[in-house]
Length: 221
Image (cartoon, rainbow, N blue to C red; front, side, top):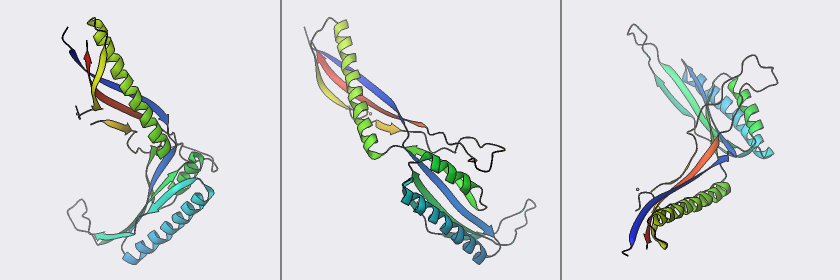
């Protein structure tokens, strides 16, 4: 009997608990004088940097970074079409990667209560070691699914021998082996009427989906 070519896809995915929380915080002040907004942003930015250094020293943070101070000005317009006096702006962006979610929640709560601080969002991730190991596992799972499908098709045709001819990420026989977690999202809903000692936000780490899809070609006879 002539060999039969069987083309299949194999998919596999795993849900993995987040190990890291990436916090994005902005310090920003606006006002009529440049010197005042720069001084406020620099002072508060330095205070937050000190807090992040302390958290890193305690082991709660794996790494953090701070952008250089940005300063600009503009002249806004009111609703009557009149241009208003010059407004100066000063901003500092800070990003920190936390492995202690309780410490992250407490710090975010304190930071959000300060004038001039905006919480940009929390993104969830995995350590490189876990990410690599999980990607390997899902890749192997996707290949096994492809093998099982090809074998099932062959058996339906009364064929017994199935041999792999080609296997690749989608798009390379369509490229897709991805680790996808949710896009950085704002924190879970704020609590109201909280006690002073309790965090103002409840962080709920997202599970991260790690998935792989392969395309494979088999010969059956």
